[in-house]
Length: 575
Image 1 (tube, helix red, strand yellow):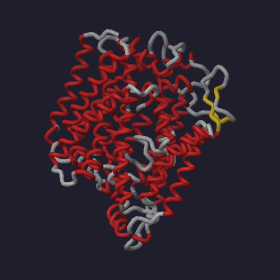
Image 2 (tube, helix red, strand yellow):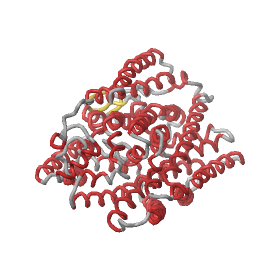
Image 3 (cartoon, one colour):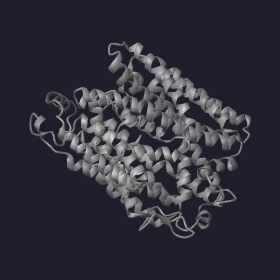
Image 4 (cartoon, one colour):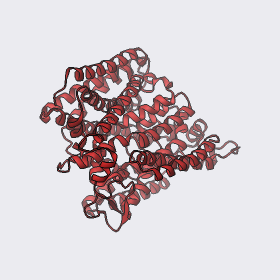
C-alpha cells in the first residue's frame, strides 16, 4: 500500500507528539524510582484507568478478535470475555488493599507479606521471571502482530519488517526511558483515543461499503450462528454444519467461564491484581481513585473497545472467506477500504496500540529488575539518581532481548496457551494471601513451580489437551500449595502483624486483630462484585444488540443495567 504525503504527515505528527510528551516529563521522572515507576502516586482515576485500557489494546488485539470471530462467531470472544468476573473481583476486593500497601511493585509485596530467606528468594525469582522471561515473550508476540500489519500494508518481507519493528521499539524505549510512568500514561491517553477512533472509522467504512451494504445486509450474508453471543453446550467441541455456531463441551465451558478467571495467572488479568494493573493502582492519588480506575478499566476493556473490531471481523467473514490466516482479515480490510489520509490515521491507530502496550511492558519490567533485584540484592544504598539511570539502561536491555525473542516465536496462540496453562492454580494463592494469614512464601513458591510440573506431566506423560490438562494443572497446583503451607512454618508473627496493621485486610486474620471489627462490609463487597459484573456484561451485550439493530434484547439489556446499576451504587456507598 502506498501512503500519500498527508498519511506520512499524520504519522510523523503522532511520533513527534509522543516524543514531546516524554521530553516534557523527563525532569519529573528523574527524581527517584517513585516518580519514574509510579508518577509520584499522583494519578487521577480516569488517567490510570485509561492507561490500563490502552496497555491491553495491543497491535495483536484487533487481529486476534478478527480471528476468533472468523473461526467461532461472536461467541468465540468468550475466550477472553470470561476474565471480566475476575477483573471485577480485583476491583472491589483488592484495589484498595494494593493502594494501601504502599509498595513500589507487586513483587515488592512478597517481602511485605512474607518473611525469611524464602521470601527474598521468591521476590528475586519473580523479578527475573516476570521482568525478563515473561515480559519479553509478551513484547515479542505484540511484535509478531505488528509484523503482520506491516507486511499486509506494505508487501515487504519479514526481514525488513523486523528492521522497522526494531526502529519503532527504539522510539518507545526513548520516550519511556526519558519520561517514566508519567510520560507513559499521558501518551497512553492520546494513543487510546487515536486507536479507538481509527478502528471505529474503519468499521463504519467497511460495513457501509458497496460490498457489505450496511448492518442489515451484513447480517443476511453471514453464516447461521455467527451472531450468537453465547456458545451452546454439547457433548463435544464442534460447530453445527455450515454454521459458525460455536458448540462447547461442558468441560471446556467450565474451564473458560467457571475456572480460568480465578485460577490462571495471566498478564493484565492476574487474579487479585498484579503486574501493570497493580502498578496503575499504586500510582493513583488514593484508595478511592485506585478502585474507580480499576472499575473504569473493566468497563472500557470489555464493553467499549471490542465492538469496532467485532464488526470488522464479521465483515471479513463475508469479504475474505478464502484466506487461511483469518486474523489478517482486519489488515486486508484496512488496505482495501481506507481512502487517502485515513490510511495514515489507521496506521497511527496501530502504532498507538503497539506503542502503548510496549511502553508499559518496558516500564513495568524495568521496575522489577531495578527495584526488586538490583536495589534489593546488589545496591540497597544506591542513590535516586543512580537508580533512575539504571532504570533507563534496563529499559533498553529489555527491548533488545525482546527483539531476539521475536525471531523465535512462530505462533501467538501457542505463546498465549503456554502462559495461561503454566500459571494455572497460582491465581488462588495470589488471592487468598490477602485474606488468610497462614499462607506463606512456600505456598506461593510451590504455586509458581507446580504448574510447570503439571503442564509437563499432562502434555508429555498423560497426553492430555485443554481443558483436561488445565483442570489437572489447577488441581495439582492447589493440592501442592496446600500441602506446602501446612508442612512449613508460618510467616513470623511480628511480620504478619506489621502487614495487617498497614493493609488492614479482612478475612481470616483473627490472631492479629487488636480489637473486634466495628463493621463488616463483606456483604456489600460481594453485592458490588455481582452487580458490577452483571452491569458490565449487560452493557457489553447491549452495545452489540444496538449495533446489530436487535431492539428487544437491547431494551432488556438497558433494564438490567438500570436495576443492577442501582444496586451497585448502593453497595459502593458502603465499601
